[in-house]
Amino acid sequence: MKLNFKDKKALIRVDFNVPLDKSFNITDDTRIREAIPTIQHILEQGGAVILMSHLGRPLEKLNADGSVNIQKFTLQHLVKHLRKKLKVKIQFADDCVGKQAVKKAAALKPGEVLLLENTRFHAEEEAGDEAFAKKISALGDIYVNDAFGTAHRAHASTTVVAHYFDKAHKTFGFLMEREIENATKAMSTPAKPVTCVTGGSKVSDKIMLLEKFLDYADNILIGGAMAYTFFLAKKGEVGNSLVEADKLKTAVEFLKKARAAGVKVLLPKDSVCGDKFAIDAAVQVCPSNLIPAGWMGLDIGPSAAKSFASVIRKSQTVIWNGPMGVFEIPAFANGTKVVAKACASATKKGAFTMVGGGDSVAAVNQLKLAKKVSFVSTGGGAMLEFMEGKVLPGIKAITG
Ligand code: AMP
Image (cartoon, rainbow, N blue to C red; front, side):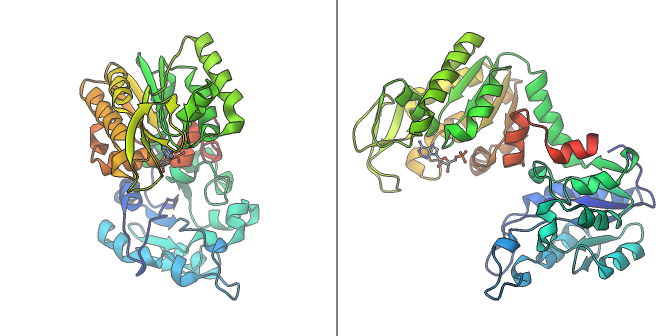
């Protein structure tokens, strides 16, 4: 953040979409903690801070009478916690636009913080409404986007608002800067050999990512349910494994493209199979292309895990998106665990390792390995789209 915030009001789009329990206590404050450095930097420079964010999907969960459930979705729930973290009083405006917001923003002094009410209380937010974005923009002197998780959405507060600030008055926050720097480093100038690991449920969700990997990967490791669509496409027997029958051609074509590009694709030779998708499933290890009828592949097998780990440990760059199996169930978590540990050991040997995408991030957190890889992305969908090579509207609105 190169801009000087002294005596300026910074309008910061943060991602405070934190999980809350039934009594509205924050159950995981990661997103708040990650926004703190940007806020503190601006306050220390002598600026004032106006924070805006969405929380949940209030317009999809209206009260029975059609009104917004303010009690459930208000950002008031965050005030106490934010005060504790920032150690300053948090002022609150009960709408992100309108008279009160304007008045409170205008009266804000250097070192003070104002939190605006949930931006998604207005349909104009997700519609990217220009008049609404213009009203928001009038509250601050400088716009700071530090909400990487919503950078793939062209919403009013994440993208459109930036159009009302010139280049000298808009910037990314530290969190956004780090996300962009790390993903760019991994994709544009990676040290070789480069290994891309992908898993999760669907080929259709990840095919664009897989194709992009062909531009720079030496190895692509495919785990998760996705792998069984590939085995089926290769005429294997996959039992009841989760497959996308309409993506067989896509899978075959991808393997052909990879061969032509000289990229090695590894599918899991064996699988940990269950007789049902459940915690009390009976379990057996089978070759992934010979899964008996009535059984389904729910994790990469021990031999596949070993060979995936060995490729990862020999890599200089590793990009990982998506779990290797149903890691939420202990019997099917081993493959993901082995891959996570291999990433940690590659990092220790000097490799650059990046974990991006919701569930693989949850897995490294669960295994307490987040600090043992080079970078863990906070933006699930946004990081996926960034790695697919898409231009994210929230980024373009700042860089032009
Ligand atoms: P995604 O959101 O596409 O990254 O998928 C993540 C989900 O895929 C997780 O909830 C996993 O439990 C699930 N998953 C991973 N491997 C399998 C598998 N072999 N069969 C069914 N679901 C799987």
